[in-house]
Amino acid sequence: MLAYARDLFLEQGPEGVSMRAVAKGTGVTAMAIYRHFENRRALLQAVVDEGFAIFMRYLQRSLAEPTSWERLWHAGGQYLRFALEHPRDYALMFMEPDERARRKGPRIWRDAATFRFLVDRIRECCDCGVLAPSDPEETAATVWAQCHGLVSLHLAGKLGLSEREFRALYSRSLAQMVAGLGGPEAPPSSVLLKSTM
Image (cartoon, rainbow, N blue to C red; front, side, top):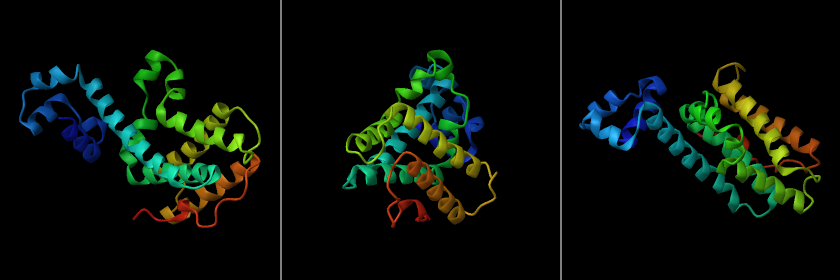
């Protein structure tokens, strides 16, 4: 059921996902779906959670890099790669109103595993002197806001750039931000500039 709901979402966006549509597409009754998901919102939340699981797998690829700085930089590249390869997931995860955040408060984002991953990469860089000492959580929020702002503008078609042009802008922007944090230059063979196609 969840796999089918996810396929519907990827094809039609959140408005295409309904309990009735999932029931029809999977050959089960709507009541069977309600045994697994309380309502449409719970079903969509499961789709979002699956998106976050995929996103985390992207981020974890950066852990293969040999230094704390390269791990942080490549995490930024994997953020971009996920957004470009999974734009509907990205939009639902980060660009739609979040009912859980309204109910539980903004702390839910700071406790999210993907945000903690970024905090850990920044803390690692601060601890070994690659970045100037700072509050890793605050710095992570700033870095995330920068990445998210650029990606959201691009996905919404507001920048009018090709993917290659956008990747170059994203890379330069992150390099400028990291320089402001006291970090070194970007690795020359940046994953940020490589096409996902």
